[in-house]
Image (cartoon, rainbow, N blue to C red; front, side, top):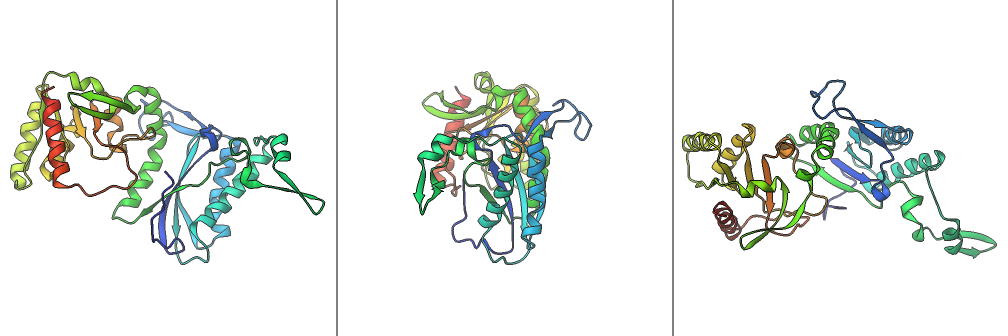
Length: 331
């Protein structure tokens, strides 16, 4: 998703998470190696072994600060077919962030050509050339992007502004090879399934759909008015249910519901989570859900279509989600 924040000044001091993909999702930058079962930090843990092009891309990223002294890289994870990087714009720039990324892409494309990986069609170039003043001028708007450029058009930026968000995203980048290894080891649990019908409701789903067939599913619906002690009592009650074999289900709207579902997840019991945020073909579970997905103890269900911008939940939406949860628990 090539998102931009409307009204944001992209020359100002800010921290950005940048994501860009290789044209055609070709795995040109590296290959995943290691064992998904190996302990984190061990020599056998999943990691990406960079190709020569991947090494050049890493060098180009490190040199962003040379060309734009106001910008500092504070994170990078190169994956086989894409990269995530964190840039800190320390002071006001004379140019937009897009110009910085354009310069980085230009350096990468130079390496792409020098390594002999760029493929262009001479016939296509000739067809789209114009004779002007005795010289041929190429119409680059008609380039064969699939072979002639390293990166797909555009990039995604996410502005880091919340407390702890930078640390969370730095951890996300570091764990990206592990998540890819998990997806490859357990592909069925990470693939988005559309048109999953449960009674009268249709969902998009990620995770273990066989949890829907479990004979003992219990809805978790708790009032917002519960005290902290009452919430803790509910957490313990639900953990006992989960330990006895029940599959708990909830949209986790209230603080109490969130506490219960978090405790169940951390205790490695199965659960079904209804999310108001829809899935598209590229959706994947949040990093906190990867282990649960791989072990087949989590099912994420989205009853509504995907949309780029998250909207505030209305009272009716909350009621609908609780109604759907009740229905699937009796399914």
